[in-house]
Every structure is written in structure tokens, then in C-alpha cells.
Image 1: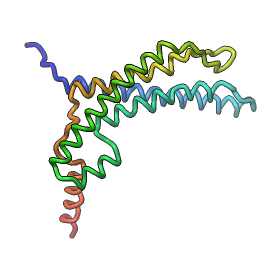
Image 2: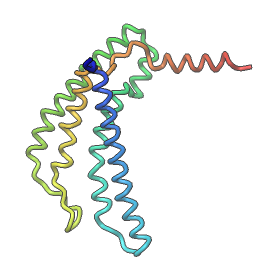
Image 3: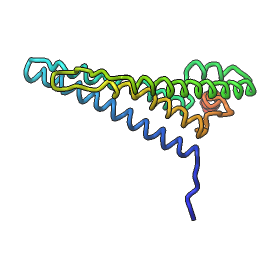
Length: 179
């Protein structure tokens, strides 16, 4: 029997991969930063390249982490608004939000790809370490593609119940369990 193809499972797998990639980027940044820190403790001299190299990961982290937040339906302002709106308005808001995210993803892909293809600069991290700007600019179309994949794969983004409902139920349950 062939395994069943699940679009939302594919989106969940993509989300796990992006989350792992973000963790690797954070670990790389920490490793680079701590190596500079320990080098300074041991020698008294600073490594000029550690800060410059570590900050090249920041655009990747910032943009890819927004795809993870989108997949989980997390946005502080949206959560607060959803908590006070009636369910039909929440459903409409989710559809509008998803459409706007799809538009944003399309723009990231279109303009990000053009920006990526035209970037020819080299970041001079040090005399020995030179990083092509394409490494940083690639985060734009990649983020757009991940967002678009989540939208098209329907990663359970249109949740009918409000995230605030669960919080209210937990709070009510805690009050009921008091002696």
C-alpha cells in the first residue's frame, strides 16, 4: 500500500526543517561569537572577523523565523484581535491574512530573486574570509518560497477556533479546580 500524501504534513515537515535550520544558524552565530570571546580571554587580542561573520546570519534568522511563526499562526496583535471578534469575523480575518501573506510571499520571490541575481558584492569579513552577498540576499526568495509553500499546502492556517479560547478554558479550569 502506498503512503498517503498529506499536504499539511509536507508543510509541517518543511516547518520542522526551517526550525532546525534556524537553530543551526543560532548555534553557528554563538559558536563564532564565543570563539572570538575565548580568543580574547586567552590572548588579550580581538578577532576582527567574528562579529562581522556572525551578523551575516541575522537576515536568514529574521526572515525564516517569520515563516515558522506564520505556520504556527502566531502574531501578538492578531491573537489579541481574534480574542474579541465573533467567529465569522475571525474566519474572514484568517482568509484575508492568508491572502496578504501569499501576496507578500509572491513579492519576496519576485523581487528577492531579482535582487539575489543582481547582487555581486563581496562582504569582506576579514582578509581571509570573503562571503558573497548572494549568501545574504538568497534569504529573500527562499523565505518567499517557504511562505508560499505553507499557504499553498494549507498548513492548517485557517483555524476556526480562536487561540484565546484555549487560554480562557485553561483559566476557567484553574478557577474551577481551586479548593
